[in-house]
Length: 506
View 1 (cartoon, rainbow, N blue to C red):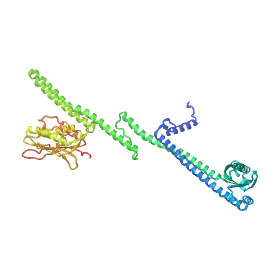
View 2: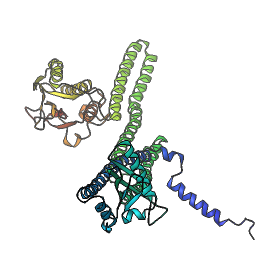
View 3: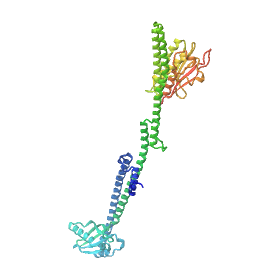
């Protein structure tokens, strides 16, 4: 037999109820501090306040209208009795009151003399008991002593059908002479009953709206909380280092979907940036391995040469410095390329004059081409503006122009153009009459440290075009490599390279 004590079924039921309550999060302290629920409370408070104002206005307008209608009905009957008294005397008035039919049931009518003695009452007045004549007689005699011929009168009387109830009468008293008074009062219980029903309806409806509003606020709060929880859970995973975490988009088209997509885009960018940074570090380490190995080898050879002939120490140091300078330039190029790729776009971009940049490049490299004996032509359109980092673009154009001049034999020529394309893009193109690049190799010459066989005898490390492509991509542009003008006079076919930038908005 088991030694475990038997569980109390009542305790299990209570625990189940509390689990349901906890699942709804209604009794949690922070539930009432959450924004959706507080907004629901604010809405309900505003609704109750506006509803109270509207009902107050309706109640005031209705009660005023019912009181005015009652006074009008009472005045009409008093005027009728007054006219009857003027025509036929007091006896006719008494007979009229005593003979009132059931149509006048809501009116209590009567006549009394100056001593307070009741002379006549209609059926409704008699059924109201002693309270009604006592009240109106006292008020009438008081008005006689004050000199007012007619006065308004409001009083309560027990209901004839329900002794515990109460009827509110609204009426007037008229003195026809010092010993003859008439009164007409109207039972306003029907209006009071209508007002009470309105109050009950408004109170019940208001309570129902508040309950439904709280229920709706709870549901809305839970929905918003779930949506926020999806976002916070993903951000917590990202904070812990999981850059692949993404928020599930429900395709509902609401604000949370828009926020989720924006955060996912930011996380995509962050993951790409971190990946690029890692790639940059690996690339720098890989790209510098060969130059460092080459430098070490040359230093070892130089050391052996110096051991054999100490007079060669100066030349060995000069070569070592040249190799170190080349290594530093390679490192700076690789670092710049890695930084551009990691950032995804060029830093410090501004709108500047592309025309002036092209003119500066043309002026600089025209002299370089002339020193080598090459022809240098340029065609630059005026008033063209570009968006980008001028220093990076100048470095890219320098690489293209330097390659064209370096790989073009004499006699030959280089043509530099800057213009708008048919799509309003900005194109810097350099065309030379050199040996060109076979079509099968054009896709790979912009990779890092790639040098073709015909260029290995010339100085360089194979980073020029790689740098140009990195700058182009960082400016949302592209590098286009194609064949030059073709074979002419035994030379060619040449090469055409173009740095194309997107148009400037506006």
